[in-house]
Image 1 (tube, rainbow, N blue to C red):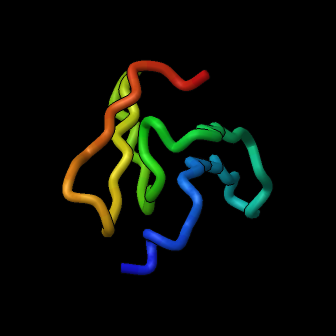
Image 2 (cartoon, rainbow, N blue to C red):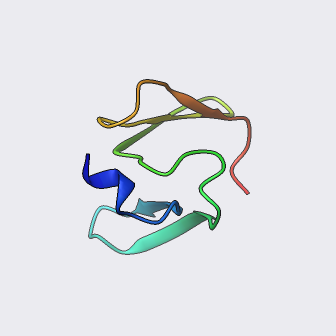
Image 3 (cartoon, one colour):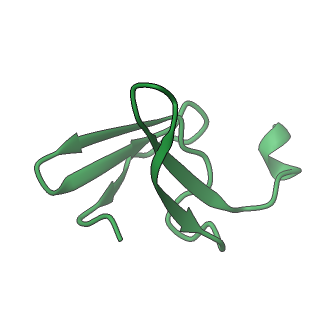
Length: 63
């Protein structure tokens, strides 16, 4: 229920082993997804999972 209070903005961070930010992906409008808890890479595809949303988003490329 809390997500109705949050702005729809997607942000994914790729972190290195020591916690440094390696890369980031921003979705300022939240059009792809706005709640991401996990990202899994399989080949060229990125699967974006969420504990709050009933669907799995898929990116064909990271740009």
